[in-house]
Image (cartoon, rainbow, N blue to C red; front, side, top):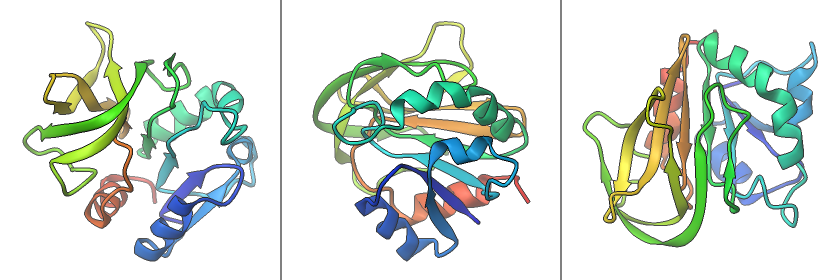
Length: 183
């Protein structure tokens, strides 16, 4: 499978991704800890994962830190969208602070960044605050110089954290599948 969407119920992003990447499926996060978990090249955690009124997966993610770290070290791509509440994303190989502050933003992507959206104007859930000496690399800022997308190279793979509250472009979906080194 190319993309596994981590969620506990049907959602619009599931249908959208399936239209553009037929080899995709939604799976419950705790399934990843099973030896029978489906193999995927990319794991996506959609917007709102920390908001209990939308999903129950927020509490499960911290138990999967080792699974996520191993997945990325082996060459996988982990994409994390906005949490919708300010929190520290401790379940990632290297934590990053997420600050919730919803609004429309003008985007400026760094050279060579695989753009999540085609537009230069998008809704964002907030911004990211990596620690000073962390391995996070800025991929996109807004007009206030706030980081809205960052990446972390870890092992053979990469983590992409974003606060962009839009469906990812088909080009971005192809880019992350191609970036994965999972067989």
